[in-house]
Length: 150
Image 1: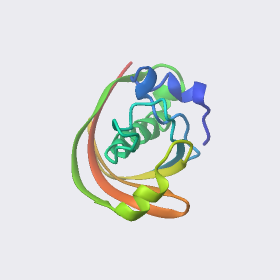
Image 2: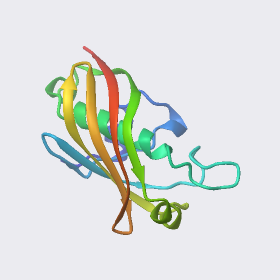
Image 3: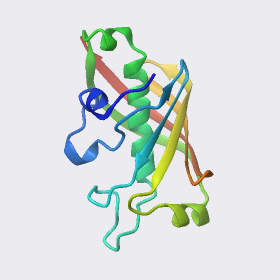
Image 4: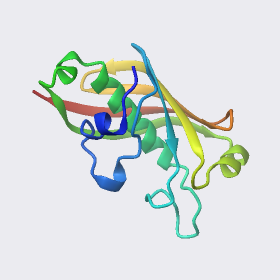
């Protein structure tokens, strides 16, 4: 399933510069992927212009929120929307610093992906990954909370 910027922008309870994932290229029952183009105008750069590595956790959380929204029949029919969502914690995270620093700069596309590990509604655990230039540089397990409203 593919969605455009306008399709998914209205689904996330984020505002303006905090909505970093704008599309899903592929959605399956347990997995989703997206490509995020790093934008120098968005707030995931430090004061020296370097990409903040933990920002990819927020990108993964947004991808997971979109995954669950786009696999929910009530959302697809327009009878429900995401009321609130946030990250509860990170169980584990591995970063290849060398690949990370070589590939994270404005304009660079990041490929992000996630798979569902466990659902205990309204909480979910996902396994996420981030790559660029064909090289994976981050793997993480993240706990998320989300509540839809009918």
